Image (cartoon, rainbow, N blue to C red; front, side, top):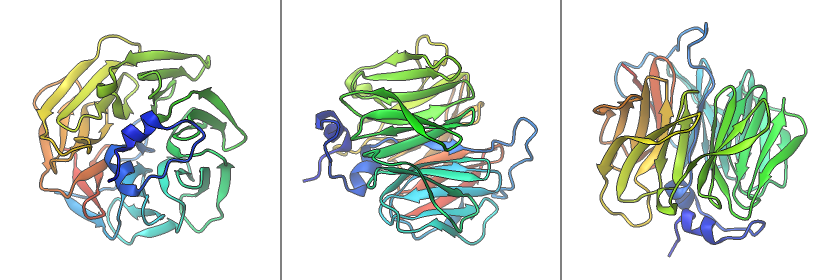
Length: 339
């Protein structure tokens, strides 16, 4: 019988290889959605033309992470090993990096796509248009997992190496923190990077300017965040509970967390209820095991359903016009309007 990833993370020692299959990582790992271009701050609006839930791509198996730039949606497939993209407006799927070793988190910075490889322990980059070549930013990052970008630097977490590392402009990397237990979800705004430490049971806050690391939020082990998103004002997160779906917010400057949405999710063993969260500053978008893609105002209020009856929606990301998500149940990528 396969164990939940969270239990494996808590039990495994750093530096030891933990054998994980795609279902465990997808079910209980921390997916992240890094949207490269939000259509704000003078950027052109998104070219997404979806007027209802629209299928953009199919044929995947375990799509756990997604990212955006202005024109394209990018994703990694843990099971097939492919890193792919499709135009937001619809069209042919572009295979950017085939046959990689458990590709996981990914982020787009300008013309460059960065991703982690859980199996190989590498952090890679290539031109987001595809066609190679591939550059290795870092190796021996055992269990390289989630990745984000802030102020011309990329940051990533590792599971077996139990570290958070940084590379400026794709150059030599250095480790920011190291522990005995894994770091999982990571997200960023211009001035801060936030990540989850399983050992300390916290959301940590890293100040990009000063290099200081502090605790934003301490949590109980059962409430440990599985996924993070930020709009620069608040950090939004969902926990690992298999029975309850909770979307919460905490100011980036610290303070008391606020639950924006709660729901009884039923009991399905070790599979967590929430999939992922993303934000555009006005709403928090979230997926759940129940088959729904929804959003809730960042100030709180009743949720709005964007799509229902989906095949276990998981990764989610958003721009100024559309929200995008993956379905673990059938390996598809979707888009729907945010308004």
